[in-house]
Image (cartoon, rainbow, N blue to C red; front, side, top):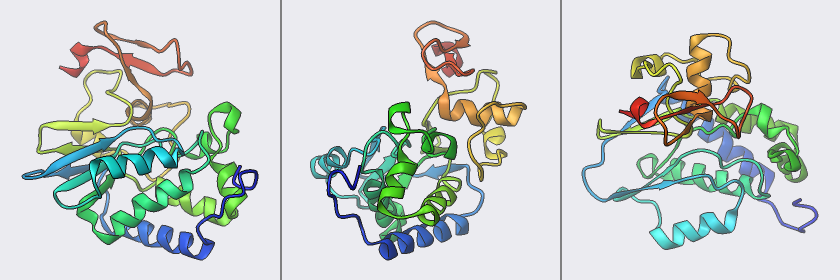
Length: 232
């Protein structure tokens, strides 16, 4: 799509350097599946799925102001796939993180994973195709390395938990169990054990109006829904 639209991508050497620095930053932060964010002044802007829509992301920055220590951004996953400019959005996010880590945060979403990225645009993926049209497989692999290091959730002032998907179908999962997940891998497509189920649901689960837990009729593939009783 980048070729079709005659876009001029960020130079590869610049993109690679940003990715390498971001990977190093996340590695140095250690095994923090949950980021604890203390917000004592200013505000927090939480950004949902942008899916490669660069114009939308720029509009958000323009409307809500540039990231700063008193105007913190939390991007709640699903930047990759579907749109043709996920690369540029991710490089902007990572750039802000590198300039001042305390101004920009990003949770992992279910589209920050290899199995989704290699799907075609028509199938709801497209990130591999986008990166391939702008760079090469080495750059794509480096994006995957960074995705595998992204935290799974952010906890704000010990009161609010922000995750991309939702709560676990067991309704008894704990923060300690979330912290114990091995996140440095692709998101499991067919979870086989308790850790994989929790990892999968944090990325894929959806809320519903009715109480209880059930399977999603929309998503399929074992995705679950959870009611307000589970949240409580």
